[in-house]
Amino acid sequence: MNAGDTAWVLASAALVMLMTPGLAFFYGGMVRAKSTLNMLMMSFIALAVVSVLWVLFGYSIAFGNDVGGLFGGFDFAGLKNTVGTLVGAAAEDVTKPWEGHQIPALSFVVFQLMFAIITPALISGAIADRAKFWAWTLFVAVWVTIVYFPVAHWVFAFDGFTGADFTGGWIANKLHALDFAGGTAVHINAGAAGLALAIVLGKRRGWPREPMRPHNLPFVLLGAGLLWFGWYGFNAGSALGASDLAGVAFINTTAATAAAVLGWLLVEQLRDGRPTTLGAASGAVAGLVAITPACAFVSPLGALAIGIIAGAVCALAVSLKYKLGFDDSLDVVGVHLVGGIVGTVLIGFFGTTAWNSAGADGLLYGGGFDQLWRQAVAAGAVLGYSFVVTLLIGLAIKFTIGFRADADAEVGGIDEDQHAESAYEFTGLRGGGSSIGRNADALAGKVPARIGEEG
Image 1 (cartoon, helix red, strand yellow):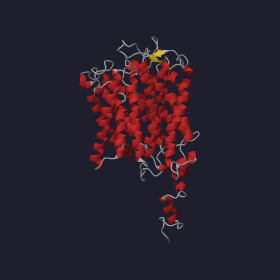
Image 2: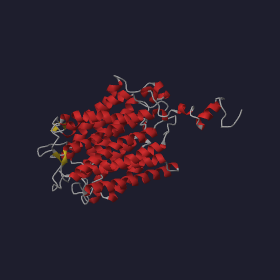
Image 3: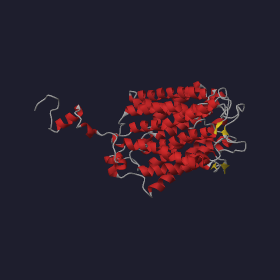
Image 4: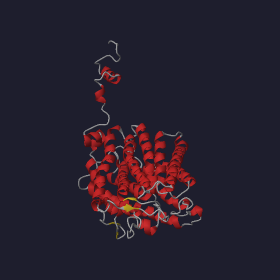
């Protein structure tokens, strides 16, 4: 066991955990004020539900020995057989993408848990303002069980990882598609699911006729900043060691994200005449999404190219919902699905073994189309599986307990209807002697508008 690698993986797990509250603020600022708490809770409940399921059987389905090429068995149900064991490859085994010393199994368990938590939370942005809280909670439990856990097995479970006789998932070991930190398992998976749920629940009342602008852009920027910060654990932590590979992932994550901000803002300037703070935050997230699968397989110049392409393409893609008629409230499809596809496929162009011998040379580095088709198949397989199964789960919930809040709840505020709370309690200002409270009373004819004013 290498203590430094273990410490880095545990610290990275904490960074990835922070991404879920960061996502809550990012999404929470983008909705209307009357939906803020519900949006925050949709992310927060994922921390509770997925953590419990991960301990019971989630880790085992994702990283247990392969069963029929579809999911892991119950080797680790209840996290049995994990204490006192190591995962990973020996330091001299440079053929593995997790090159480095072995780490305790439980440090890997908790690191991967944080990926499982944030993935369903990403989906929530597609159905903001209109979902019942307990229906959403049930959806999270079912979705991670039959969609995320198996897909994580396909993508992240490598042969030999938990032992010499361990057999992993088909995308990693048979297709040999590259996905360093979750472009397919997390972002394409969540984006396709978001599209399916947006179709199941239907459009928000008044959309697209009524303006539904973000109520708190500082929240959006705060959330984007927390996501960017936590994403270093997401990407560089996936090296599973304090290694040169972690450094490659770290610098590429920075380069791509910065370039994507510029790409998105340039599109806004050319299309709309001015850059926006919402665009800057969205561009950063688009860049983070796109570089996730590629961060350890491309050079920094390749990362810059992926970032600026993703920023521009995602900025254009968010308008698809208006042309195609589906109400993806917070652009989960335009950012996560499209960004995930861009990053996954572009490995087939920009991948280079000069920066990671465990990767592959893409089209621009003499590798031909071999890696490109593998990347496309992986993206398409995850997209199709996630969309179809999510559609079935959503319809089952819709026609049993009901998925969508009623019309009065949407109009009056889903926070009050689902949680009996509101994010902003303005009535408390009336009795505190504040200028806001006094001006409100003045309008009601009760007190002077300013101190000392009579009549």
